[in-house]
Length: 178
Image (cartoon, rainbow, N blue to C red; front, side):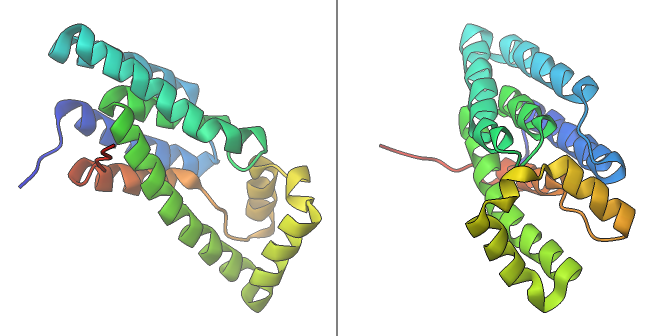
C-alpha cells in the first residue's frame, strides 16, 4: 500500500485546516498558507537538498499560477490560490497539478449540487443565464457566500474539494509523460 510522504502528510493537515476555516468563516487565512509554503520549502530542502527546494519552489509557482486566472475573474478567492501554492510547495509541481485537476472535477459536481440545493429545478437555467449574460463577473465568491449564509442558502466552499483532492492525490498523483 502507498503511504503519503512527510510533505504530503503535512499537505493533508494544511488542507484539512483550510477546509475547517473555509467551512466556518468562508476564508482560508494567510496564517495557514504562508507557513505552509515556507515549511514546504524547508522540508523539501532538508529531505532532498537543492533539488528538493527547486521542486518545491516550482510546485509553489505551479499551484499559484493554476488558480490565479480564476481569482482574477472572482470565481475563487486568493486564499484558495495561496493554499494550492502551499500544497505545491509541499508536494511539488506534479502534486499541485494533480490536486488542481482533482479539485476541478470535484468542484464542478460540488457547484452543481449547491446550485440545485439552492434553486431546485431553476438551477441549470440560472447558471446558464449568469454566464451568458456576464452577470457572474459582477459577483465575487465572497459576496455570494456572504449572501448565501445570510439568506440560509448553501455555500460553495472550494476548501472542501481541495482537501478531498489532496487526499486523492496522495494516493494517485497523476504522471504526465511527453
